Amino acid sequence: MRTASSVLQAVAGIAGLTLIVLGVLFWMGHAYQLLSLHMGLGIVLVLALWVQAVLAARTGVGAGMVVFALIWGAVVFAFGMVQTRILPGEYHWMIRVLHLVFGIIAMQLVGRLGMRVRGSAASSADGSRTGREAGPFAHPHRGSRS
Image 1 (cartoon, one colour):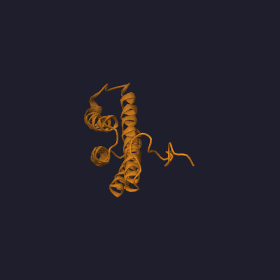
Image 2: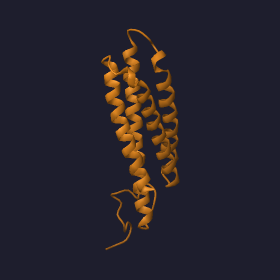
Image 3: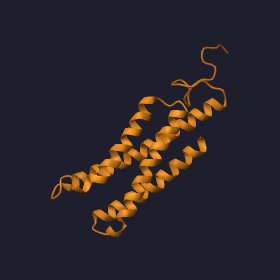
Image 4: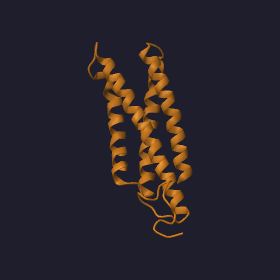
């Protein structure tokens, strides 16, 4: 699962960077012929988020973060599909900024979930305890005297 999680993070990073570049081009009034590419890559980012959330759930990452990621993916997808119709006119720039923020949060979630998946997989592979105390700074012999 560690490899799959790393691949998802890379896909989300490449898609996210490309989405931001395309978004900036659109804001500047260029490259509208690439709008379908932008939408397709947005779907790829949301799918990467959802798959990463499922991997996280399977490796024991807290249900709260997993559920939030699944819901956030749905919000990003829905908002992306309707954002051109929200607040048209002079103040639409606020919707564009919100669209950007939603996407950046989705990218961050893919990364954070990925770190937890890899951390959980590493701790279960070496027999360490799982849970909150099994982070990178957990002492392997907590409670024992040396």
